[in-house]
Image 1 (cartoon, rainbow, N blue to C red):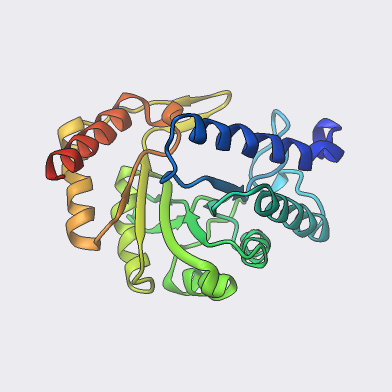
Image 2 (cartoon, rainbow, N blue to C red):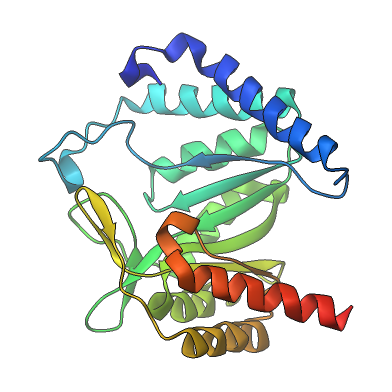
Length: 244
């Protein structure tokens, strides 16, 4: 919140957000629901006309201090777990992962990729130079997180890239795995939806469950996934309910 001139109010904002979420859980009597906090690797501001490597990242020590503050504040406020969202910057992701580890909370590592015309997978980063997503990249992140990592999510990743990314992840990670696909692409100033066929999308999700033993299924950002994500979520909710 520094870029908005309210950096000193960050802890208060986090604490209040957790209080509101916890109150909603208690009011609904959903004691089994876990309350998650999140950290993401994204520039604090993106001025109009800038792109890629020109994004105004703060100095490295400030980045780490900000992650430490957010992670510890979330832990003290009472979240049950930390979700690392959109780990897509190879180096800056280490700051978020290390801060989450040091919070003492269980951590889900969420990574984002995109598929290239030659079907290669790269991290969905903010730099001009694409970084291939490989087992080596994931191994380094998992090592940084240590025993705090309890799950891995492939998130905010287009349907076409999700399967190949899960394939890379499963070569390294044998624990709980999630898939939260999106569709379309961002074009300033709004997201451009590119609807995919709903039955085809459900078939793809089924294949991820069967082939990679995916345990968490969702759609990253309901604003992004549009109607297809809602159809998929409702489909699997009904399926789980029928299976008892």
